[in-house]
Image: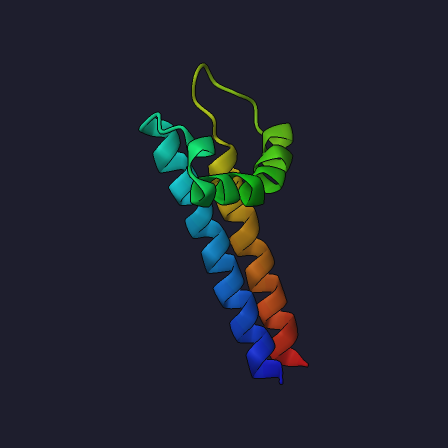
Length: 88
């Protein structure tokens, strides 16, 4: 059972990081995400995390560093959860 939880945490965090990456790439390409249901799902699933990251990071001109903060936070939480689950 513990192995499944570890695998779930690993896959979930990887999917979340990938979704944020896709959102960043499409924001650079100026693609309207709300026309496509898949991109709308990506936007709605990543917005709460990026909103929290935006509170912590200041904007520097037109640069938004919140995805980088989100990547680091997700990976940090993943490492903590994996170590807790593997030690139980």
